[in-house]
Image (cartoon, rainbow, N blue to C red; front, side, top):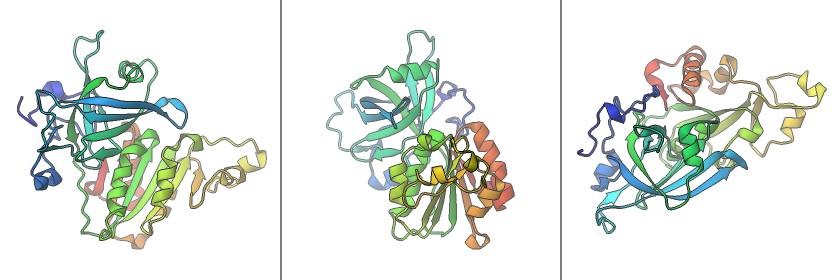
Length: 309
């Protein structure tokens, strides 16, 4: 199949927000400027370098892959790996007990343009066939990926407030979205990074968030829906503020709230004078739908300025 051609069999059938059938992989502006071939436009082999747990949780894995050239292409210097922030790749796995290949989308949180490497964060699901497959992977095994798939394109020339709402492990693909703003000195966009998690233990990449907090145009807040506290006096206090027990666990410049992110909290994160607002939502499809409604009500943002990863 020619590069970036697609057919019905390329769809994973999970109702993805950015289905490959609607977002055909195509050369990015960066790849075109480099004048090189993006190795992942069609299914390509990637070798597993590591399969590690994250935060000590065996059900959350950090997977690191590198391009594995075939057909004598090892010395091909005219190729790169370009997966723009906010885009995902499709994994195709052939399992012995499945008649057809199993397809699942994953969003990289780190990529190496010239080294042709990428990393993904995966939460394993009980009894999930792909989860069982990924948990058993060992270094040097080769898998097939294709992409990039997505429709978000960052505009660094127009200053605005970018509200990024992430649920659980879906914080991972939002990291490069933040980095591309903060690492560009000419980018005047402001980031409001709102992380929704079960509790503090399930907030991933906390060290990275603290690195972001050093920048003038970045602010984050953790919303902990099921944070436990054994002190009755804390449980009866104002739920809009972190209890004393939680405050003692927070690091410098970390902000947190006991409870879910609601319309009131969302509105408080973006002052009315912040001008144009763009909202990016990463998480489960039901979470995305709910947060899209919250954003419309709380921030008076148009549907055209809401992007679902």
